Length: 257
Image (cartoon, rainbow, N blue to C red; front, side, top):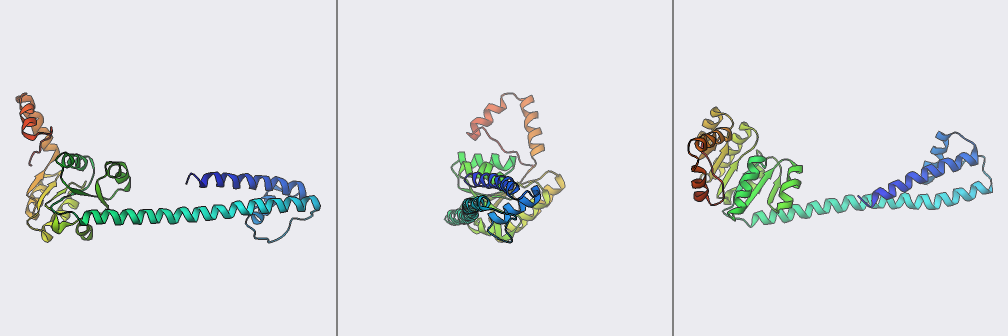
């Protein structure tokens, strides 16, 4: 894209030069001169500027040779950029899918929001293989690509997406999407296709937590309740934090709702 912007700027300059030049040659208004500049630049050749003398002819020849060449180079560069970008995405998609296909006993993290990011970092600390399923391309570019995490761009509620993530070979799944309804659907789908799978789900409401357990989630986490319980424990027992750090080994703890 950085190579295309200077060419676009050059074409804009050529249009200005052409408008001024045709204005001096023909004495026409700026709109008609701009029109003549565009059709000359694009080699349409709909009509010639009138009146025109030898000096005007030389201007048209120079303008046509320089402008048409620049315009064609722009079109070629844009086409090459589009094709290369598509090829790059196709190669990245294929490489990522091959990486996931080689995984076994890995963990699947559905959703890479704040909670999903923390889970992924804990899995990295534990040196566990995992796949992130995230619907936001911006989030993938912001987090998964710089961290070199295996990922799939798409909707985790899509059964095909879970299959691509290697659900049949997975050892566990975390449903941490922003919606309780989406998490419930993911848990149902995952439990139907892989019943022995260890499923942990996020729930914002207690009613959703009961449904998630019935759907097959082994553990359901309410982040608000878990945070409040931990804060209360730390107020009552200030030494509890050091004990939990020793047990966990990575300064992280999970509360079951």
